Amino acid sequence: MTYASHADLGGQPRHGAVTPEAEGDHFHAPWEPRALALTLAMGATGAWNIDMSRAARETLADYAQLTYYQIWLGALEKLLLERGLVDAAELAAGRMRKAPQPVARVLHAENVAAALAFGSPTLRPAATPARFAVGARVRMRAAPVEHHTRLPGYVRGRVGTIERVHGMHVYADAHAQGRGDAPQWLYNVAFEEAELWPDRPPQGTRVAVDAWEPYLEPA
Image 1 (cartoon, one colour):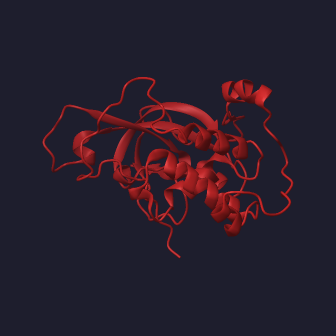
Image 2 (cartoon, rainbow, N blue to C red):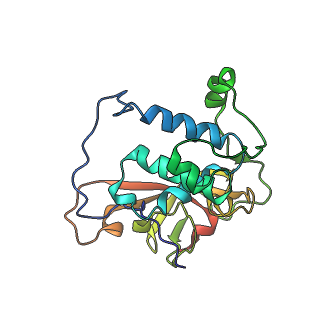
Image 3 (spheres, rainbow, N blue to C red):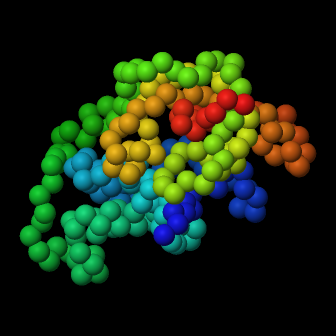
């Protein structure tokens, strides 16, 4: 089955204008904070990692028809079902119908603030030398990817310049597939707009993305 991300929308036309919302306007319905809390609590159990959750969200068949927290809730249900932590009858009934499955960790209320402040650091010790340095010209991987990736579609096959070396970080592509941290060097790569969208009127902008070393090759 072909992997298809419905979330890779950057640089695509016909999605309408971006309408900024008021600063601090986080929720639009009373159930949304509960969806956020459930997602954070289940993520803290270790039943999956953040990149697995991103993969679950972007592969929802009805992604384009869902609001932000509907996507979060749909992915949570998908992950719970896949791991046998709930069954379809329980989701339909909206209540527990059998004894709960054990989890590795539980996020208690008194620890929430500290957990959110700490986050999930992704920086790892450098185990190998970086292949590229600041100023290097690189071409982004163009081949199709049959799994979750953080490489935006609009930069694939394009040539940019490395502007910063971030160090070695958890490699999202491997992490989402359950293959461990698999740390890779992470770079900030900048592109001229004419390289990305040669047929559009120039806007006088440059675009920069963070990209792991497996995404890059010398230009």
